[in-house]
Length: 539
Image (cartoon, rainbow, N blue to C red; front, top):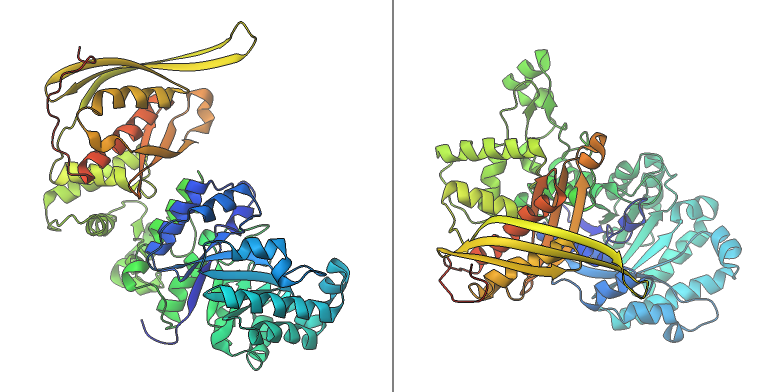
């Protein structure tokens, strides 16, 4: 990739959280941030510190980023307060983020009617806040809210707002199409005029998708000179969503010739990251999503298939493997091999592409995905499956059976009591074990029973903890008999991994995901097959 550098700013963790039906946990936010960091996104906005407990907790212990810069979002000082004595600004500057992004008004109507303040006071609020932030943070951005509507109504005042931020030390001045009503030709014209006041390499664009033009508007802003693009994964966001970085990034790199923080290898991870987000949200991926959708390069029989097989350029605007997708011939799907080989490289598995085991693994993956497994959001389960198929894994333990009993009752004081009890029968290092443990739920009880047997043998499991647990109904028409998919995220020693289990029995699905989590930890920690130990749990 070559050409002018464009910087990508992801606001999924804040703007995406405003999507109806989306409620990120702290674990979700950390996992998504790590995924964004892994593909070379330049800036990751973690949220608004102090605005809610989730964001405050996230910033208190942010994930370690290696390539991206963490940004905290907030607003300029309030009217009637100095920047140094504004509580909201203090929480923003007190975050552990190196980058500060603050929003302020740039539409005169919003200033006088919504804020009820003098136009000059708003200019002072912008300048004071940016100036203070620039003295405290590594980098400061100013999001000019309602900029395009403001420019149409009063271009002189809108330009005064962005000039005040730039002159006060803002590294980026971001022009926001807050209600999503601006059209591409308007964005191109207005950004071009702003670039005469604020240099293009200090200008950013932030678009909403209310007219379906967020991606187009973002690209037109880049054509007009802007060099930062803000957006979200899969276009998450309030109302109709934000600009979709999953579509914007490959367009900038592959079609417009711009260089990004993403390498060509990073681009091949876009499909995976897009689907990883959907899995964490328990949402089905959009089949016809540009670039990454399952149908984006699907061809159904007849003349189209013949044309594609002769010259893919007839119906494929890019090579699908460049963004981690692949061609699908709907009648007879022969694709997927390249994806498997790419995943092998990701996990450090050096396998000959012509090894017949690859085809057998591919068929296994297809069969499992037909049954409901999803490996885009469960990399650890995929690695276990792949290593078992290609080179084998030690059998650390074998659980021959388990039983879970749930009790729900009121005690003598009238308090509601819920309790789960798990009994497991296991074999470790040739010895038989049986134990019983209680927990505050069936998964907790089952985990406790497994650990009671395994910890004396495998001390590597001592600090493994479950940090997230999600259930998705795969066959809603079956009601309470539905097939369920359970995804578990585990962590230990700063490493996070996700596993998946599928079954008509939610406890069995949970056990399968839990089993993979334990095996993955043991393999990654270099544990050998179990040694014999003496203990009271032996049968």
